[in-house]
Image (cartoon, rainbow, N blue to C red; front, side):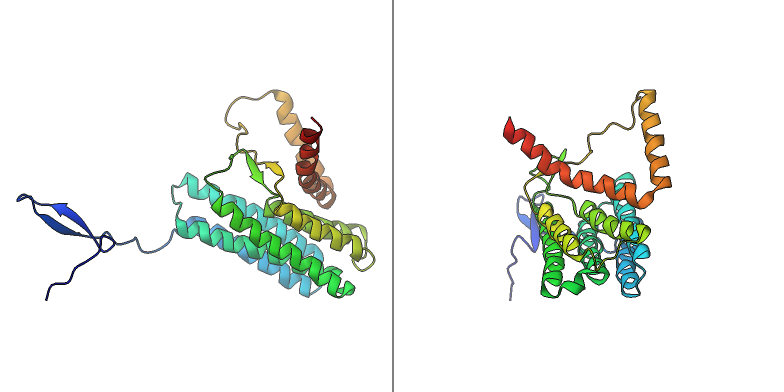
Length: 258
């Protein structure tokens, strides 16, 4: 008994006699690329470690782990492009890892640090951040081919994590109590989450020229930034991400006034 096959199962190829002959479907390649996915796994590990550190009361380590996760997340994509090892699996794995490292981890660290003293208001603020991070990443994946690559629509999740983690790191460095500042911290966490799903444009810096020649003054600025970060890492890093988070609404206000 003959069995018919759909085009999804076989392709049709014309032979020498002019008849159509079935051609076997090319099977998908097995396995995954190790190098870029190793960086993604390391980023996921750093995010998970931030949660564990917060549960143990080591909030400074939790914040540092979040920033380390951001660096590793930035490296996986660059390594994949440099080694030509991009894959659909890697893109999906990266998004799932980002939900944990930049969505769940910062929210739980902030909740353990001080938001838990607010009861329902505290965990609702933390949940708003987590939900917005997941929604922002889902929207980014579906809009990847239709938006201007020079801008992000909504605050990127790593930058949002930098705002929350920087706040906690500064509090530990300068002796601010998370319980005392729980209300403004909860508002900042929730508003940061809302910025992730907003329609504000944030510069992606993908059009930044780093291969060509630049003025000597530009190199001095880079050196100065490194020196400032080395002197006061918590304050400087938090300021950078806080200014970046505010740049979207501020740019929108300037355009609206025009």
